[in-house]
Length: 231
Length: 165
Ligand code: HEM
Ligand code: FES
Image 1 (cartoon, helix red, strand yellow):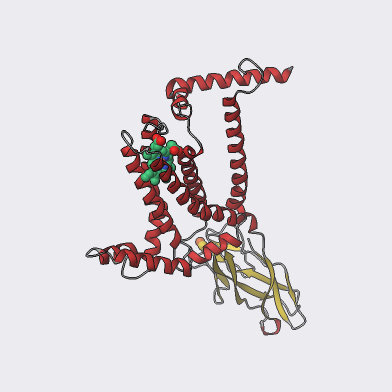
Image 2 (image 1 turned 90 degrees about the horizontal axis):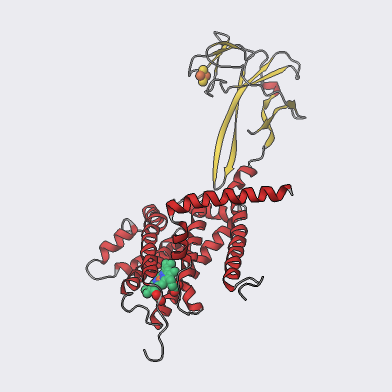
């Protein structure tokens, strides 16, 4: 008996607080717009954008946790990763998720783009959604590119040497781009540090902004209907 | 369906999403907490017997300095920390030994023995300690620390028991 009374009091308290917040923040409205918006009859292919978003959040969370131990300096990067893998409880799990999540995210984002292409959802009025999407794909690839160097092991070192070399083979501007990417003519501490800055600050900041625009446009236009036979 | 006691498809989806989301959060969240606090839990007290000199070569009634270095592995880095002190043999009795730490109890500078003044003097804020480590003058709140656990092994080495932290 007593516990039922408690329960009801809690419920009223919750309702009061919720209503107070709802009046000011429009929580109910937000919920309807974000999560209860009408969707055309779709299929599992329509979930890939949300899957990309989920993977991005997962990468952001695990990435932040990795920075608790990772050190972006040539004499400590490799050792600090070694420490994460063998010295810290569940370090292998946090790094494992981030490592495999990166590959999976590229894959999922790419298939998401393919489905938008196949269903011709990039047409009016969604051209900008598509354009922003192209930016998202490039940024996702950029995250993979900059993140790959961070362990500072042989594989990472040479992969980055080769990739920046390729960027450097562009006519006219190649040499400048190579030096800008590496922070000098060769791979060095400066390269590692600027890849780190790009990987944890610059690219994610732009990525978050573009995801925001992408989602705003999706909510504004609603999702496209699947093309019918007549289309 | 509506009006019956059964869960609607919508509510079923909501509950399922909530439950799966909750499981993912816990499965990833719990290990992450361990991941974050792990180094703090590992910093257990490390202890060792450390040789600081041959008893025979230590003069009686004269503070004799000693020093040793301990290496700590902090994650991916090793740090060497130096420790030092003075051995004061009050008499020929191998048990009658006072071993003081040279770390000033004020803010941690190393004190020096000044034979002429018969005092330990700290260079930082001019504190003075007696030969027995008592504060004679200056800001230190308590006497010099002592290594009370010591022994002489079969080869005549004087060892002190050292505990980190
Ligand atoms: C970080 C990467 C990305 C995230 C987080 C993301 C997120 C989303 C989400 C949540 C949706 C809702 C519908 C759905 O899931 O299919 C969506 C739709 C859409 N996305 Fe993406 N997306 C990303 C990358 C891309 C890329 C690379 C493109 C194309 C170049 C693109 C183009 C579009 C278009 C045109 C729509 C509207 C589809 C429709 O209305 O049917 N997105 N996106
Ligand atoms: S540190 Fe020795 S007197 Fe202040």
